[in-house]
Image (cartoon, rainbow, N blue to C red):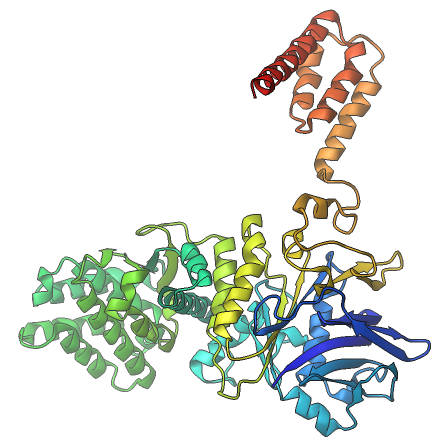
Length: 610
């Protein structure tokens, strides 16, 4: 089934009023409010399958901060994914879509006067059929600190929509992992679950990129750090008991075959830290730690080195905490962790370790089934308190991935993890400023690798993409008929500027020329701070009425002039100050000019040779 959202008229929504947004690359719609008339025509230079054979549309909503880009995405989510009932939306708003090459419109309050062939949706049943005939995805990497449980549609998930925004995942990853959406979770539980799940999404992306030979996979592999690290959190309010536990556990393991293993220190530490960080410490009120240690010592006295020492030790823990179901569940998972690491750390070629941390190459992690084991990371409550998982570019690297690397990997990781039914419904993807935190070089590449990724990941579905941006690097990859420019009037009203009517040439345009467009920078390319400092320098010079000595020139003016990067401006300021300098200072300017002349003479000689 082939479906596209082509146009929306927003009568009044969250500060935006009476604007029409063209979302079709093929058609341009125009609505006149005063006559209730809608006209449309085909877009000049439209090329089918321009971005990929399964990408029907890619539209950029471009505008400065505060012009309403994200609000338009909110409206689409609200209106088209059951976020708001139709009767709660303004009756003069409407939208237009196409289905199997037939164009339809829906207006809750009345009809439109249409010049051209467009069918009207007459019933809520037909509208419901449209809303359930595709999947809607919203993805955003930035965090909005306004209340997470607000009615903002970008922070919720409705109907057939899938919310991949940081705000939504930060709230809901913990519910997904625990399969309990009714429980109240702590702030730390939200953060740890989100952080761990993000890591897993990136790991899954890594596996996909590693196994699928394609350009996007290679691009992603180049950004994924080589190492994943697991570090024990050795700071705890419960560490008054650490030395006691560590001592008795060392005494125990020294009586077992494990004492021969070089990684015994790590095993003892992970056991101590685990016991002290999970809910285990809550039970110390009922069973004092001294009693626990005494019981372990009693067990050591009768221990015979015949069975797995880890299994044997945890059987004693189960006896001690037999009446506490929660503790028993957590101890079971901790035991599995310990056994897994014991087996894995025997292979010191794959894993490097110290007493408080281990580091593993991601390409090797698959061989020891680390990822299935780490799935238990989610099963043990509060495990994030004592195990820190992070990426690095070297063994035990202290620096994790950069914010730009994280932004890119997180974005593709969230999309890659999506799973679908076999119905092959089309997909509408809403992307909110995905280029944030990306270096300009990656911004230049973003559209290319996004379309390649979509072409592979959703190869059996038609995909429409609507993205917001204020980056000229993004705009230079989009033809003018794929762009909608938003701006604010002097009355603070959002307006839309049609790139076709205003002849904005964007596709393949020079980035510098796009920057100089008044749409981006209305007061030149110079930074505001630099402009202020240079204006102060010029004002200081203009207010001098006496001859400036060489000493005063060097101390007060020369350095301020020399740091100006714009050569022409720097020379103009030299000319401004020169008439006010004593001869020695003028001689210094002459020497500077001689160097410039010598450079020009060398260039002329080189040109003569050529």
